[in-house]
Length: 250
Image 1: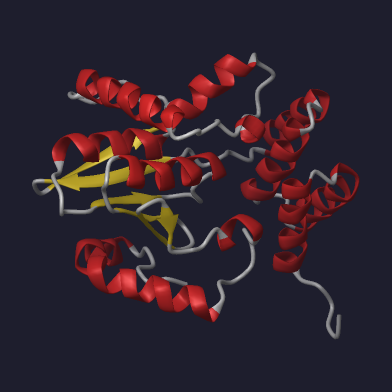
Image 2: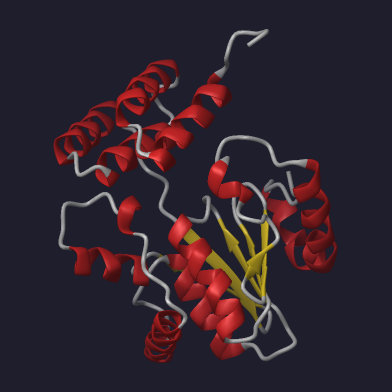
């Protein structure tokens, strides 16, 4: 490289190590990043997920202990969706919503159609030493899926389902949203912490580029796609500027 690598560069490499299962290099990078930014919860979580994906539960527990010792708190995932002028908020595993019975039924229907389409849950990011079935149940109730279920109940075509996520959408929810858009013939827009994902007919506007580059800026091609989506839903997201949240695509 013609210049010294910065935190973003090391982070991109750590993301690649997670995807390709290179624990040895990933561990070195993760520890280097934690040393550079000891209060950054994302680097702790990514290294923890790398350990979990390889079944290295001692490493996971050590990292959790380190986070507790340093007071590093993981930001809880939250998905928001607007319906009839009211913003509904979902956390992972949420059971407090007034429509939870209808949402649970829709989750069952989503799961049934996903399996018919050949979907298999990606449990590699579940950072708990539990049985595979329990991992699948945990993924089944991620905040994105709860918000999508709510949207399927409370909106009708051709209105798209618009969701805002405070963190990056996980790889399993990304894969599931693509299939749901095809199986239910619905357009789904998810704005996560980094960019828009426009799901339609089983395809996402990011072309799965995000899965390969979690810490790297989007390509010009993806930016053009995302601005096209931004034009269709920027009005809905305008209120986020009042809270200081970026409403641009990059």
